[in-house]
Length: 357
Ligand SMILES: O=P(O)(O)OC[C@H]1O[C@H](O[C@H]2O[C@H](CO)[C@@H](O)[C@H](O)[C@H]2O)[C@H](O)[C@@H](O)[C@@H]1O
Image 1 (cartoon, helix red, strand yellow):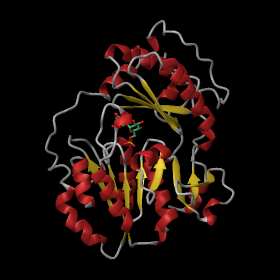
Image 2 (spheres, rainbow, N blue to C red):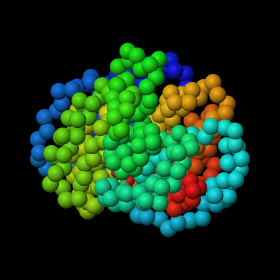
Image 3 (cartoon, rainbow, N blue to C red):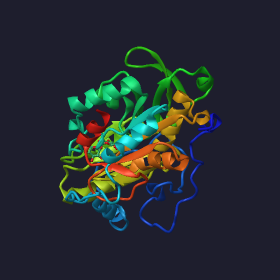
């Protein structure tokens, strides 16, 4: 990545006026949408009352999106024609890795730990930890996930890794004075071993706003049985895995009511999770480019072989970067057919352990 480009702000320009063609729902609730009022840090007044009508979410796509993002678990289908098993091409990958600097990127949820209904119980196995430690001994290894950086570290617990939390909006990397001087998105800090590190936080100006939203969501959803709000520093997640489907419209309306006052935050639908994050041009792919550049000075080197293993839609941004640069390998962890920018796949976390072993 061109270093100069990291100095340009990834913050998207102020949104345009409200989209009148979507009555009843604020257009900021659609990805990269355009919408009204300017940046507010004072925050809306949240009144904890049951939404009288559910017009906003019912007359729009919210409920449909919640349902279609949360289908019942499908039976595993053979993916081998579409994305052949990485286990089969592993020798080829290792051949290409000879005389090159391999750099490993991994997602956490669904990649290092199996997907479970309660996000607090998404632990990785000791076998996985052991395998990961083995990889990190020889190659720079980074975890890039939607959770907060601290949470990632708490779950993985290996000091020798790089951690990029909040979908890459909170990257910890080693000191490079040339990179870190006088930029508002760089923060000096220390890692878990007390070593000096830099943080790159492209959404740092959104922090007060996100904190307000977290507070309001906790307050308004606290009595909804099964609803869970997760604060992941630069993103917030509302899980409704354990909420009865009749309660989904109420959750949708509450979240909608809060977000309509924050046009610079966007909402995405994931499987039984609503996700709120800053509307900035930054994602896991940009985080990969950033780490490759800051840690291995990638742009001047042809001997670097990045491998990215992930299972989620958000990992596709990283797969796309590798594909566009025509370098390295994106590996999809998946046991159902879906569109992806990878060329090979692993079925589950057990296979992720195998290729690291
Ligand atoms: O980095 P990602 O792969 O995009 O995932 C980030 C999210 O991970 C967690 O949610 C996912 O795993 C949960 C535990 O297995 C599961 O319950 C949920 O359905 C998955 O979406 C985490 O809870 C979220 O806050 C993260 O955003």
